[in-house]
Length: 260
Image (cartoon, rainbow, N blue to C red; front, side, top):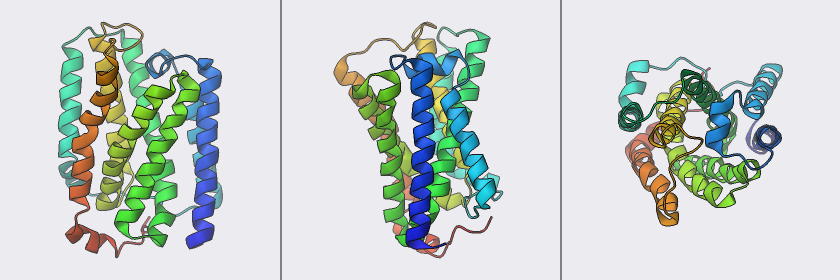
């Protein structure tokens, strides 16, 4: 399928996936638990169920071109150097703080990786393909990133805090642009899934360890709480623009994303 039918189908699938994720999170949290509390407590059932939905839909429909081709890992790791530095820095800061119990670290890692896989499958896999068929590279990258970011505002239905969810939405859009750029430059979802999961893990792990192993991160002033996440991911966004600069976009315009 091409253009409008493919895009409409992708939007429906992503909307259903998002609904499962949010509904499952709301049922698990009761509408007032922080993400930090949920991610360390055990399986995020909404996320796990939503990923299962994507697996079933992809296999049943024999959906091709989503990005599961094996990448050139050496090239992928070279391209991921900047966010990789941030991840190493946050993990270093986490280990310098008060480490939580091993079981907590385990669930933070597992849930972060599942979230990374699920979100990349939905946005940079299912949604990006029809957007690339319909729009130029940069337009498709921006649209994918904005939709990805806007969906994070719905976390307010899980946590009850829509202010923080809006900040998370802006930060997610900015990081999402880098994820999209890496997906296009590597031709594969696999490196981006790995990077996304490790990024989320390092953020949650750092926040928990610097809070002394308590339920959530240390309290910060309202301006800092709003500005810090955006400032932290700004280099990611700028690096994404660099990766999709005009010279490279000319090469990517020839890619149809159906190689796998």
